[in-house]
Length: 312
Image (cartoon, rainbow, N blue to C red; front, top):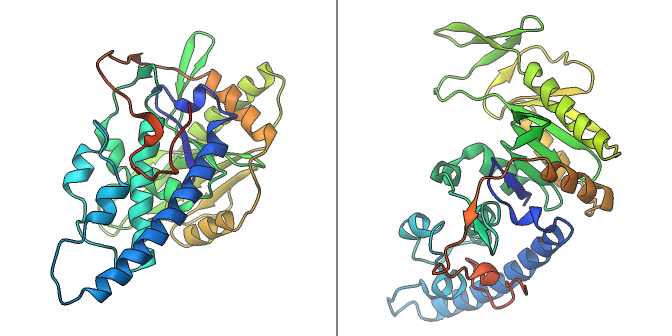
C-alpha cells in the first residue's frame, strides 16, 4: 500500500520526519496484518466449531479496530459486523482501515491538526493509488507548492525508489466511456457516443509540475529522474504517440501498469527520502495547534493491535 505523505495543504506527519515514518509504516503494517490474520483464522475456526450457536461475530473487529474521534466516525457506522468470509475480504477490510489511518497521518501531528475535507475518505483516485501500489511509493496528492512568491496547485506526484511520477488523472463523472484524442499542443477532444467537446491538453499541467519539481530540486542541489504520465483507469486515449518522457495509461493498459509497479521489489532509498524531504519542505501548510483538551491517541491507531503503536 503506497504511503500518503502529503494531502493538499494539510500538516503531515511525514513533514516532521520523512526518514522515520515511511519505514515505520511498512513495519507496523506487516506486523498488524500478520496478527490480524492469525486472530481471524483462530476465530474462523471457532466460528465453524460453534455453528449450532448463533451469536454476533464482531469481536475480532471490536478488539482490533479502535474507534478514532474524528476520521473514523462515519466509517464506523457503516462497518460490517461479521467476520470476513475469506482472506481476500480480510485484506480489503484491512486496507480500508489503513486508508483511514493514512488520512490521519496526512492531516495531523501530535501538536497540530488540519481540517480534513471528508470527500477524501471517498476519493476513488486516491484509494486506487494507495491501495494498489507498493509500500515504498510515496504519494503527494494535490499538493500546493510554494515557489518564491507564488503558489502552484499540483495534481498527483509519486516518489518511487527510482524516479518521480508526475500524474494528471483524466476523469469524468458520467457513465459513458470517453475517448480522449490529442488535437494539438493546447487542446484534446473528448468524444463519447452522444457528444464531443474540447478540453485542455493535460500535458500543459504536467509540464508545469515538472518545471516546479525541477526548480525545487535544483535549489537543493538534488537530481532525480522525472516521468510524466496521463492516467485514466476508465476511459481511452486513442493516440498513444506521447511526448518525450511522457506515458499515456488508459483503460486498456491500466491493469498492466499497476501490476508492473506491484512487481517492483525496490526498498526505500536514501535519495528517494531526501527528494521527498525537499519537496515537502516547499509545500504549503495550513493547520492549527491541537486543542489542549483533545487527546490524540496517536499511533495506538485505528487498528488497536498491540503491535501497531508508535513509540513516540
